[in-house]
Length: 424
Image 1 (cartoon, rainbow, N blue to C red):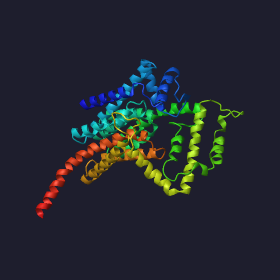
Image 2 (cartoon, rainbow, N blue to C red):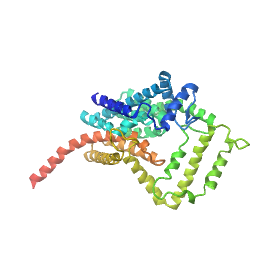
Image 3 (cartoon, rainbow, N blue to C red):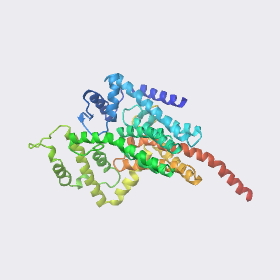
Image 4 (cartoon, helix red, strand yellow):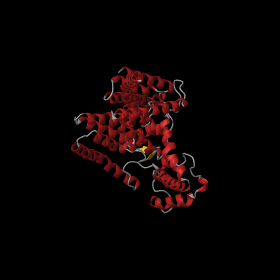
């Protein structure tokens, strides 16, 4: 509790330094406005227009909070306190996860890693990253508990956490695959697992069916989660060495003309768009067409640089970067590049220790697959430190478990060396 209190106080100090109404004037402001709009109209909007670009979690959550705190500075203060609290509770689940397999001191040390200014700053910005991080750490803990005990309550808690996480970030949809692999490695009851999988599908259908119908009515397209992935995919085609120059590509034939044909039903006979909100939808979908064209041309012209960028450069950037856009407490952004690199190397040694000692292999494999899998999912679109930041607790949990293994390994290595010296 002392660690949680100190984390909370640290974030309060940062809030005072940054200001209650501190904003990036970007997605965070749009999320707050969308919440206010939702509670007034019942519509899910983003950047002022009806949308399916985002999952409904943020507008609904912020909208409910605005019912009690209005639309001004008091709302921002309430949101910041809630975000800070969620960030702090992420440390609790890190501690709990590590403590299942290691001494409590290792869990405490792992949770202390949330004291770094990048997490403090992130918890003072109203974006999806903080609630998503909380729900991700909760899912990991409840998944561990499912393997450890037969109590059904942990399945329900994991399911609730997963569903809520999905309402904030659609990318987490793949989580059950990683959890399934882990539970099978732990020899989880297959019959029970099958029943739980059916329950999961039924619960998700209760959301996906009405959400998909809603999206089809508004956008005349099958959108089970969100649209707009084309934009980050397009941005990702400008990352890395050897990406094609715009001047060398025929966008009119391969993008403009294609988009005109694909979206002709969205325009009236006078060539005006039928609904204003469709303009953003078409624009983002057109980005997807452009992205596919750029990717195909890049791979044809320079497959080596393409593969190097997507399989090495972009994942490496996400692994070593930090989501930290404004210096607080006098700590510079450059320092985090070295901190994250060293941290990742330490975690790699933790994985090696687990396999060398033949202990906690299942847990470490699960964490490795979950982390690297998500890194590559994002890197295949746009390598952005904002996306990788809430995944760092996965590394912290692995670090905590690995620390216990290392502490156990040192005396064995010392004893082995001493024995060899005696024999000599």
